[in-house]
Length: 120
Image (cartoon, rainbow, N blue to C red; front, top):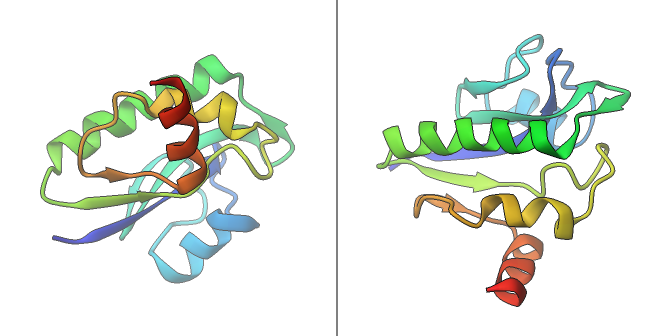
């Protein structure tokens, strides 16, 4: 089973800071690609540009696409960073519920697990 680093991105794929830069340096993320699988990483857009966050409803759509990918790659293990909770400016309380129905091969950050345990 391979491990995949899942990070928040912007639609332009400008992986210049935070987890996106880490993915670019160490997990095969490709500059200029803002969504999807790249090497041993997966980009979930949380921002439109490096300076403008996406609305929560749009982030949910991208997370749902990610769920479809994870289900197709059921033998891989996806390690999600606290997407949307850094440069995009959202809180775990806003983002974590979007992962309520995550497939079993998706590993969430503790901050998301704490919120999901509170609301279940």
